[in-house]
Image (cartoon, rainbow, N blue to C red; front, side, top):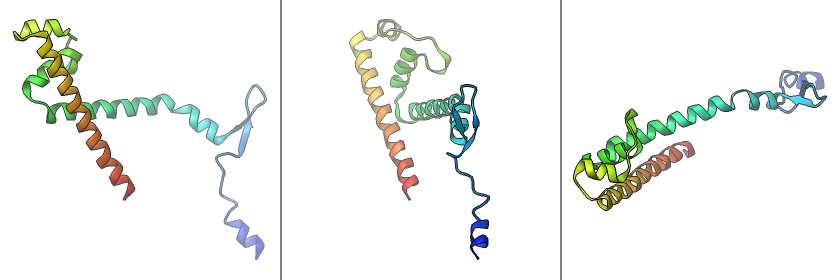
Length: 126
């Protein structure tokens, strides 16, 4: 009976069980190999997801003049980055007004992204 009970556990493998030795003589476990392989790939996927969320928030929550200022200021959609002074001259408004628009727009984007983050967090908890 004990042999039958242990048989179902014989195919289980621990991530922390040693699977070999590295060139320095240190024990290597499966979790070490998994962690090392795709760190950069995971970071790249997360970055692309964050950029996608930023552009979605940009398109949905900003007014046209806010999109223009933020888009020019940060070079969005492959554009060139501009200073507040350059934007002010191009749009015929004051630099301080560009600054206020930029600050207000960034806050809107932050709130929109936080709101979406809370929604996805609530979905995960359910």
